[in-house]
Amino acid sequence: MRVCAAGEPRLTELDVSVKSKLPDVETTIFTVMSALAQEHEAINLSQGFPDFDGPSFLLERVQYYLSHGFNQYPPMQGVQSLRHGIGAKVSAMYGCSVDPETEVTVTAGATEALFCAIAAVVSAGDEVIVFDPAYDSYDPVIRLQGAQAVHVPLQAPSYRPDWQRVQEAITARTRLIIINTPHNPTGSIWLEDDLKTLEKLAVQYGLFVLADEVYEHIIFDDEAHQSVCRFPDLFARSFAVSSFGKTYHVTGWKVGYCVAPAALSEEFRRIHQFVTFTVNTPVQLGLADFLEAHAEHHLNLPKFYQAKRDYFLSLLETSRFTFEPSCGTFFQLLNYEAISQQPDTDLAKRWTREIGVASIPVSVFYREPDPGRAQVLRFCFAKDDATLARAADILCSL
Image 1 (cartoon, rainbow, N blue to C red):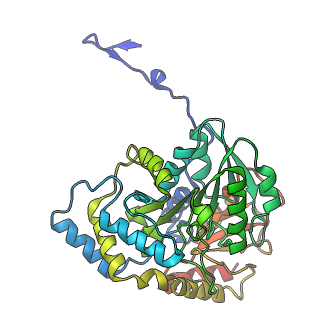
Image 2 (cartoon, one colour):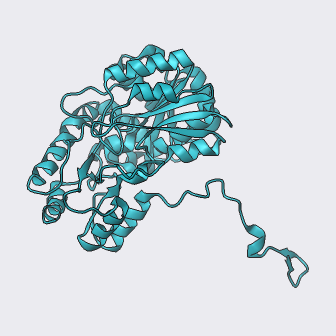
Image 3 (cartoon, rainbow, N blue to C red):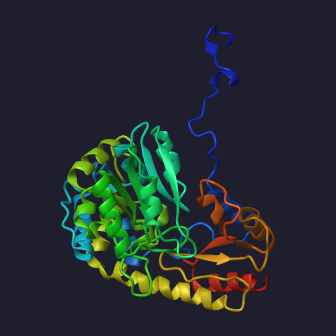
């Protein structure tokens, strides 16, 4: 250690080396591809955010609270009016009566809620079942608890669970199962029979369930979202996580929530209070006002995004891509095997640079590489029609 002239010790670079807890984790592909899109001025169909703004009434209400002095800490668990609005929505949609005081917690985005739920029930030595392809935040959080993620593949092209393989993956150390429906990145959905089977397994083996339901209101072709909140014995051991950003086109606000039985919510809040403590006040109040005044918004969302899905796919009919229409989310998988044999990550980066359309490679959602996996890219269609038309015109030229 070197010594300063005044006699005080000073650390050198060698003195501050850190042994990483996640040595194999790099910058997320979403950040990489969005940065690449910006650098090359490409049409960004990679990261999942709209290129249109949220509802004007919502923006006006947030601005009202910003300019009228509502800028101090709200309650740790969330503004009361928003928690009551969430509880009323859950009851109306899923027939599940929840106590807003003890069973609803507002979080700094769904990602924080996922972290807190995993940390609340998973300990060192536990196992957590994750379905591949999986959203990239699950695995690192599991590992930070000293636990192990057990990856069970969903079956392409439907990307539905193979329940025999799930049951075979359960051991005496299995503590939690994480599900995601509607599913990112594939756009698949789980059906009622899937949730009933999950309910039986969870009860039989004494497992907790973390349901990532951030796309709950973006589901197509007259299907109903099968929330864990619909199934009493399943909800009794579940965390249901959702997102206002996805529902109201304001992903940058990073506001989500977790609905869970009181005992689980109590443990969840023990973690939450030391992660973010709370979520900004004006946005919570604005969301509460909007939820009360415009309950029809989330009810109309399936029709809104299905029209975008159908428009995007109609534009691609003359392309060489093959696809199955997305069942939910605002993502569409496109199979490019007839166009290129290049690995998906390399191709996604090359197309961003060379043709000016950015996408997300699906292979990054898998823990282990699989040489036999289909060559597919994920495209976000939460864009205005002009953006989708420009992107499709380029893709059809390949």
